[in-house]
Amino acid sequence: MSGKTLSYDFRINALKALRDCLKKNEDEILEALSKDLGKSSFEGYATELGIVYEEINYLTKHLRKLMKPTRTKTPITQFKASSYIIHEPLGNTLIMSPWNYPLQLTVVPLAGAIAGGNTAIIKPSRYSQNVSRVMKRLIEETFPAEYIALFEGGHETNTELLALRWDLIFFTGSPNVGRIVHRAAGENLTPCILELGGKSPVIIDGTVDMALTARRLAWGKFLNAGQTCVAPDYVLVKKGYAEKLIEALKKEIETMFSSDPLSSPDFPKIINEKHFERVKGLIAGSTVAMGGKADESSLRIAPTILFPVKETDPVMNEEIFGPVLPVLEYESLDDAISFIRKREKPLAFYIFSKSRSDINKALSSLSFGGGCVNDTVVHLTAPGLPFGGIGNSGMGCYHGKRSFEAFTHDKAIMDKALWLDLKVRYAPFKGKLKLLKMLMR
Ligand code: NAD
Image (cartoon, rainbow, N blue to C red; front, side, top):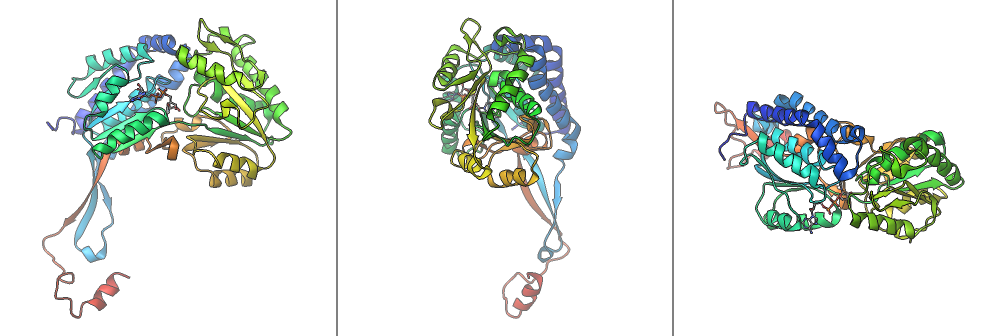
């Protein structure tokens, strides 16, 4: 209401301050990520800090252009006028984030909120408390509380925050809590961006080199010990190639995390005991082809491959969100496509194939948030690509220019000249229809 957040100078300085406070506290942030999730400094930088910097850099570089009103066409019937869109801040925004990428999934939306000229209240997950604590201190030291504030706490805090009236709720988390958020937002007709999850499938038809396929698949699956919203959830492999794939996966996993992944410094842990037990339960319901071991004291579960797997196994009936990869076989591409289409629309989809026609068929017949051809997860690193789900995996999107759009309203203006006033539109209409028909064909 004070108008302080509106100017270009204010926004750019806030983005720079955000970047500077992260830069100055990198060690502490990486330490907190290691405490909460056992992330190595490399992984913490690559998947959290690095992505946040890229987003802030993009917004900083393009902010002036993004803020400028966008000119659009004016119909001849409205001569003489100009039409333009003012990118107006939404106002006071609520950002709720999950624990799996606690820094990235909080600060990337925050950068969008700042670039859009909004104020923000942040509510990170209670589970990643070390990162939350660092973020709280940094936010308090960097921004006045009436501009950006962070609240720690659990469901009660969320419930209280959701009962308030916001101009936008930006929520990242599970589809179940997404429903609660959407319902609460509905009370005030508050717009929502819901970044949710689900079971993201991979199709492997055996035409791509198996070692390369396995390496890219294992990387995306076991990043953050599988606790990634766009992690490959399950694999559909063409009949006859499952054994070859599993052999290749075993080799790649051993190269990445040694023959004893439970003690690898590069392999993260499960966030807490509740999830540790849940993921172990999913393993117990199927046949283990590799891994399956767990260490309760460090909350680590070794990279695990399940094969053969039935559609009815517990692991196929919820988002895994852990280092467990079920492998199922398919007969034809049509079968694989209909298997996926029977389920909720996933957040991500991946296909490994050399056949352009099969790739195109899968991409055009499946509905999903985003994905990769011949790789996994990396689509979310491209600032030009929107990141978001569809249906059960979410609504709305962000990253790069889409972050700015997510946090602004496109206010549509037609600006009329005063020196001319075409009389056609005014009654009486007698004798004017012919001219109207010529103008509006
Ligand atoms: P979650 O939905 O349990 O929690 C997310 C947030 O909601 C947390 O801040 C939590 O405190 C809060 N919350 C939990 N229960 C609540 C309730 N009953 N009422 C109000 N608030 C509540 O999700 P999570 O376990 O933190 O994260 C895992 C899920 O998030 C997975 O489904 C994953 O796919 C999804 N995810 C999606 C993205 C994405 O970008 N699309 C990214 C990461 C995670």
